[in-house]
Image (cartoon, rainbow, N blue to C red; front, side, top):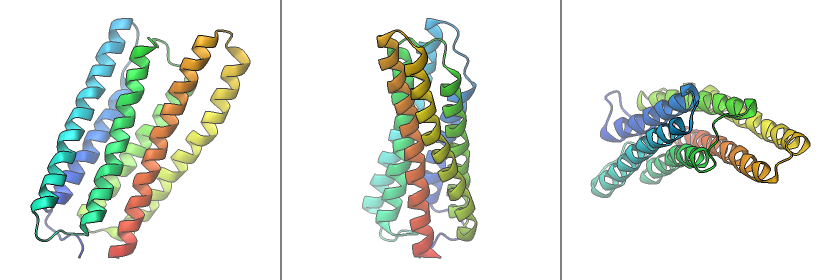
Length: 206
């Protein structure tokens, strides 16, 4: 059974979750860190998005437990919900690292990671909207774009770590920056998992 023309409660909730991810990723990309106090504001704001995401996830699970009929298979709704939640969790965990390590001046590589992640977030939201509108055939191209951005992040991680070890003399900073780079790349991996989950749903409901 596929999504109908009118958005049901599950497609509305999934759209809300993906919109929250898009807003958090946009904030992450746009926010300018200039002082130590800015980092706290930055981290707290993304934490708010993460908390909102948790609330939405709990609502989906509650509704699944009470629903007699679902628009697509229950396990697919749950899979999409949990993979989406991984993305917002990853964003929150990374901003917590910025706060913990007092990273006031993000590197150009960090900025590139976040740019790719923001693009992934926009593509994810588009996919979820298309799913809710039952435009399953249109999802594939956007899923491919997400995977391309993730591949770019894989390549960027290798470049960033190579440059870090070649240019940074402070071993503490090497440890800290390497962890941030890896955390950012992990968010891209989570985005790819969402794309894979979406393609699975499309294949089962096309």
